[in-house]
Amino acid sequence: MAQSNTGRTMLKRERAKEIFKKVLKYSTADETEAFVTSTSYSLTRFANNCIHQNVSEEGLNLSVRAVVNQRTARASTNKLDENSIRQVCEAALALARLQPPNPELLPMPGPQMYRAVDRFDSESAELTPQARAETVRAAIERAEKGGLTTAGVYSNGVHVTGLFNSRGLEAFHEETASEFSITMLKEGSSGWAKKTSSSCLELEPEVLADRAAQKALASQDPQDIVPGKYTVILEPAAVLDLMGFLFFDFGGLSVHEQRSCLTGRVGEKLLGSHISVRDDVYHPLQGGAPFDGEGIPRQRVKLVEKGTVTNLVYARATARKMGKTPTGHGFPLPNEYGEAPMNIVMDGGKKSIDDMVKSTSRGLLVTRLWYIREVDPYQKILTGMTRDGTFWIEDGEIKHGVKNLRFNQSLFDMLKQVEAMGLPQRTAGEESFEMVVPAMKVNEFNFSSATPY
Image (cartoon, rainbow, N blue to C red; front, side, top):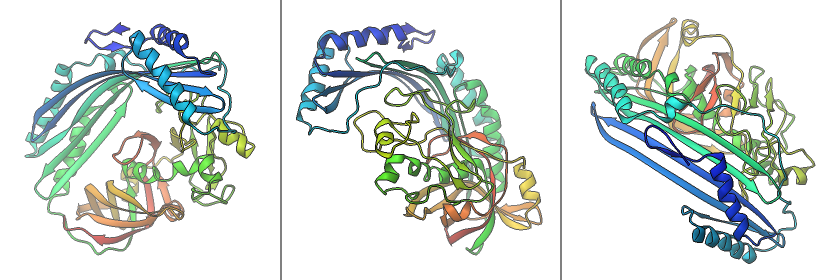
């Protein structure tokens, strides 16, 4: 283990390999796999214009998967002494023997070659509570300057993953993560902004605080509007949280088992010609390891090209069932999900949000959405509400805030009505995983009812 200047203990490759050697010492399974993970995470939480919580935690976990006679199971422990490693190996084997045989279970993969990705930033790993507090103080000062009340989170951490198996596979990845999320509140209005990155230097907390403050001040005394279909400018966070409901349907197993909205539709043009999407873990704004839950290298996959669904992603077992090539998108076994694309990158355009506003005669600007639920999973009809900055646009200008609205909207229909897009950017919301997506101007977006606030 290596120790940082802040006292964090971080798992290193050699230590992970030593742990796996002990797993092999005690495992008597036909095949053995070990996930060794280390997480170090710190958080400063603030509300009512003061810091009220500081949390720091560390964890080290060993998960062992045993295979015996075409049966497999997994057991985990957070203790790494010799006796605990022996016990978790015995537990995994005992559980495997209790499972029914799986004739489709594949042998564990052997050694693989991985493309390097550098997602470790030492400043983010060593960010101190004092440094986070200084940043939060500046955000609070911005709130007080506008007569606002603020709340939010500033966090940083390190996540390390080592994956090894008895057939010689060895995969290792370390990554830092940082997040700044802020809400500004005024009576009857609010504003929000959030950003995540492997580097805390890229968060720009003062910019985020100012953006949230401006939204809260500009949306005071919100007015009612009649529900209906409107031209809507969706900021990237709103796009993200809608699109997050679509991409688990791109897993090969979900299509094979007819659980996906894409069942029988691969090769069809389901979306507008503006829409092209790929899964790309190697994109500079993306995060994550270059290997999947079985240790298979992740591939770039074009999912949608000019509105046509072109490809799915496949774990090893799904690829064998469907006569395809594995794409490196599987989850750790055993699992019932199969695979999913987790590094979404959407193509965009060159229009700024200001450009989109100026080109809109009557419509709405939406900061973000929340409480999103599926109404019809096959047609991808979603419902949810706007939040933290919804504005009326008239004659190319933002006129005033409006009370929040509930929407009832098909994603397929929405993505056929895209008029303009902005530059793709790494985006974080509250309802989905991070993606690289643009802002969108969408016509005929359906709002089904108003809300009282």
